[in-house]
Length: 122
Image 1 (cartoon, rainbow, N blue to C red):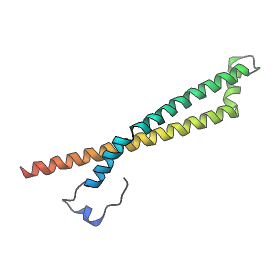
Image 2 (image 1 turned 30 degrees about the horizontal axis):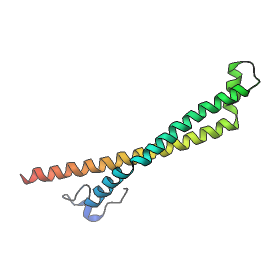
Image 3 (image 1 turned 90 degrees about the horizontal axis):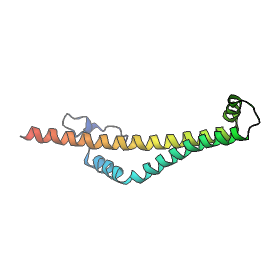
Image 4 (image 1 turned 45 degrees about the vertical axis):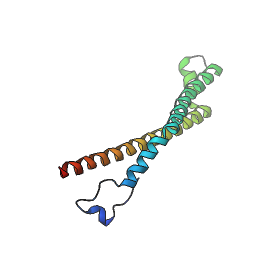
């Protein structure tokens, strides 16, 4: 939705949001629910896998103290991989969430501009 304003958009009475932009925003809002739900599920699953990996590594450790088992787990490559996957899932979810918020704001801006136009006609 990032576009550079055209010269005609800089006119005082130019619409804040075009009909095409609001149509696209509404379409994306209507069709992205499954995608964001899956991304949220992937994020929760990845967070769980980090905790699970830590528990497995700590359980397999020969260290005597819990602090040393935890340190060994946190320093392992398996934990690093699990954390990397978790971060990727969080980024994907947050991007989709931000896109939905942007689309909702586009629709709201259009609604506000339409209300202003109607009020000016009265």
